[in-house]
Image (cartoon, rainbow, N blue to C red; front, side):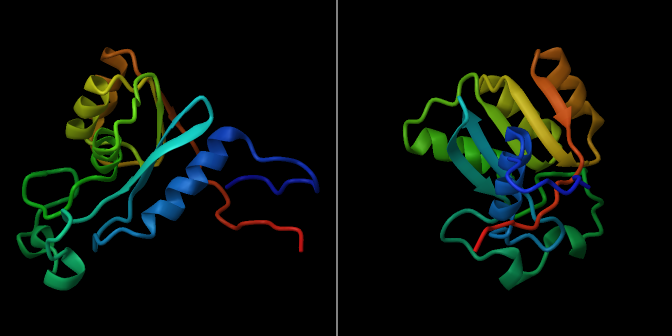
Length: 164
């Protein structure tokens, strides 16, 4: 948990973008994990993504969770899921809108799975900052092997402070 800040003290960039990823996660339609991701370059937010079914398709909130129905543990058999991962959606949005994410940083509420780590490597993401752990150590090993800097943060204080 983050320490309380003194009046007038700004939050660090990593915490700022991680808090935005948690807000993005609130759009998730997954019954197991609400995951949000943002891709940033030069301290500018480029794209966002959350985990959920493809556009125009019924999601798990409507139909239930295939993985729960089949008793599949988290981190296994990724193909048995209606959802596209948050990281994947953030990369897809960049492609759809012609935004270069090369040399960007991905902030995600969870560590990536191996499939997402492969996508991030080929998208030339240079840094991944995550919070919660996802049970896939192969993904972290792949990030290291491909030279992607990885940082695991403590979960930030998710309250928003304002001066009214």
